[in-house]
Amino acid sequence: MSASSVSPIKELPFSRPLEFEHAVDCAAPGEGHWFVFRGEQLLVEIGPLERPSDDLRVRARPAWARVPLQKNHNWLGSASLRCLYLGVLDGTQCWAAELPAEAEAPAGMAWQGLRALFSVLDDACFALAGRALQLIDWDRTHQFCGRCGERTEASRKERVRVCPACKLSAYPRVAPAVMALVKRQKQILLARGRHFPPGMFSALAGFVEPGESLEQCLAREVAEEVGVQISNTRYFASQSWPFPHSLMIAFVCDWVSGEIKPQDEEIEEANWFEVLQLPKLPSKISIARRLIDAVVAQIIEESKSTTDV
Image 1 (tube, rainbow, N blue to C red):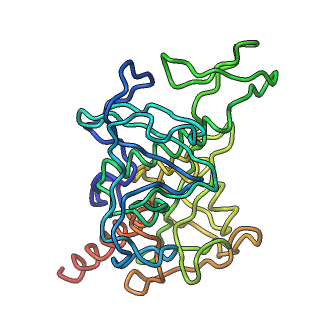
Image 2 (tube, rainbow, N blue to C red; image 1 turned 120 degrees about the vertical axis):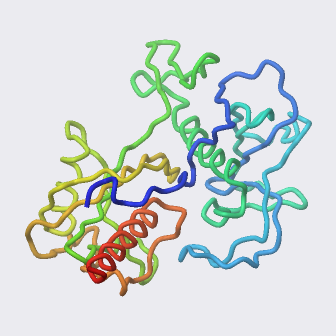
């Protein structure tokens, strides 16, 4: 299978909207979309929880939801722990803020996790909610210099916090992680992490370590997690993943040798699956599901072509 033989995918969830203009400083705060978080929960105006969910972590999705559009920039008052300007979405300002863990939702609003809001919020606001969540986490965890301990200051020119004493700069962190879908003829290798919902399997994944390429990381992670060797690595796609600040980079690869031996610390179970007999899979919010669906469709199409001949 070559990279070009896998069907192309639409923009993945959390992709930066084309109509969004990134900015750090706002000279004249005005009406804006507000992405307000309490921990990992977003404040939204919300409809009844009546839509079915494809995510085993989410029982039901709301019928509709939208982020607050506020004319008064100070509508949160002194309750806000931090407030960041994100930029402009189609002519409207966008702001991110964090409230304390004990904060109650205002009348007509509710706290919801991003997984529950997938396919409910419009795509642009959903993507910016993911961006806002990562930036709030970065701002919260970089209030003090990691080298000398001095309180840092936010720059008004770029997204960075700078130590006024030793000048160490702290930019928002992005942790690259590779994802591997291993293929063996008409089978794919799927595994269960110990933290997965009951019955769910997915592609293999792991973080890139210092000093290794993406391809080296892929081979190492597959060997460590399930004990098999791979070759013919092909890039599929990438996705920003705000849980908490990853960049998922997905690949398809071929099995070369080895029997499955799950890594006890991380993998509960791993197996080869026929494409027409798959287990429960991740939600379509994730690149893992898009990767599996695309490769399964490609294998089925190849099988049809062989049968027709």
